[in-house]
Length: 238
Image (tube, rainbow, N blue to C red; front, top):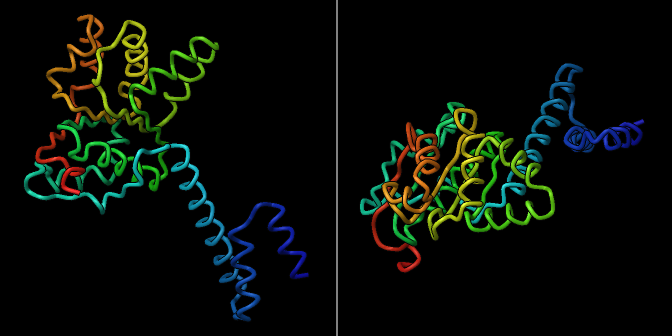
């Protein structure tokens, strides 16, 4: 009977419950019926949550396996610990707010963005990470093979979108329109984190075409959390 119970739990994909049940049997522990049911349900819930987090982390494809506990708050970085603490509770995602991270190369912009994304995954949010140039390349290919709308819809469904290395080169018309579509779809509905070597004041020139740039920046910048990192390159220090 015990083996049959374990077999049926595994067939139903109750893996957490099966592991806990087997542990109870092997440990010959004594539980009341209520205690045993509570134990099995809790074990199954925790296992499903852990598997969900692993799926989200894998799907996000972060540049760094970063954690918020690893972020350095040394004085020269111009990084306010109180602000970061408020951001790490991920309530900005519930409020559909954006985060803009700027600073020179190597100061840790991508690491902080990835750490916030990692935290969001652990809190149950769906996150997607892209290098901006790779995103535009992917979207151009999707235009050619007819999967563009499906790709845009997939991006829109994620609670948090991280766009890294914004502004390395000026946008052409196709990239500009794709970027506008992404930002428009997410405006006031989802959150976006953008990291860039350029100060926000120079983003207008990178986007180009004043009408489109105004539309994008109006939706992206107003009300966003701003992090302007300073200091020497962390890679150089390392």
